[in-house]
Image (cartoon, rainbow, N blue to C red):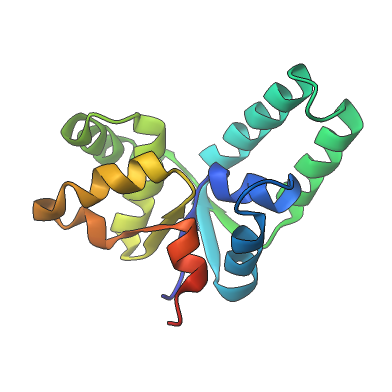
Length: 146
């Protein structure tokens, strides 16, 4: 794999110890990464939810946000991805927010790595469209030898 698009499900694992953290750190170490600016808002929202549920205190969430802000991820604008993401969302019957990441990968002929196993399964079921060739589960990408 060359450059890889990651979503918030991967980035959050860098800063919150959970299932898949080792794999997410391997992706960060191994590949040049890009993500739409949407990832920043999604990560902030996830951190807020973790504070509300008592999984993190406010200081921990702020530190996690700082680490994500400083991570070596090329952040790209979302605006130009909207139309294609909407088309993908309708075609896949899946949330447009997730399709923003996929759209960025498709537009640049990059792979898309996500910890969202439901999305990975859904894309694999659409094998006729070729979309399944662009998405990798976090576990599969971390184990890849390319």
